Image (cartoon, rainbow over all chains, first blue to last red; front, side, top):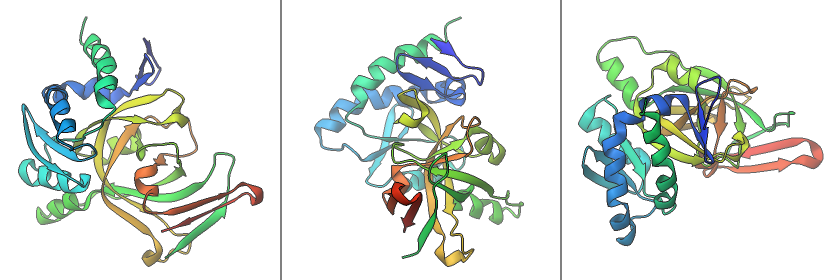
Length: 107
Length: 149
């Protein structure tokens, strides 16, 4: 694992930006929810749709990302929201990424 | 359909853009009678390799953009395969050189990835999410490019 001068982390083919390394934990619950629900969403044919997730709950699915964002802003204003594209590649990719992210939290 | 044509540069096909708060946030600020932050004028590279549009972290921080989530995106031009970054929603305008506002391409409520681009001649990578709405011709034989939208 390499940390660059501008705070980015490079590991196992991933480039984790400085802001992502610093802030990903605010979305830890939402990422867990996405990964837990991902097999079901893919099996039900929701690939390439956009999920609005809050905590352990998927609040809705949209075809268009800006519609999902607008819905999130209506509900939560300018607080951080979590809109995620349902991506067939993610089970394998996040299986590699999550251990790297979790290792950032260890002293 | 407006067409933007220009010479290729050593960095590639570059266009002028403006990055600003998304329109829904601007409406909220106006409603609260607070001053709306200015847009940032940025040079942008048309990058067919970038899965999503990316904006330099200094621009994102200066605009104090809202967080819209996180994403894992493929940006081969940035040398390390997959980038994991914070997403923000912005309004992006590709400025037509004529200056005629009716010929600008305005993309509202666009989710962009915050990325360090400080080592380059541009502050924005325009990815396939925006190029999906355009016709982009890279004419290497005559060192020109055309963008129609």
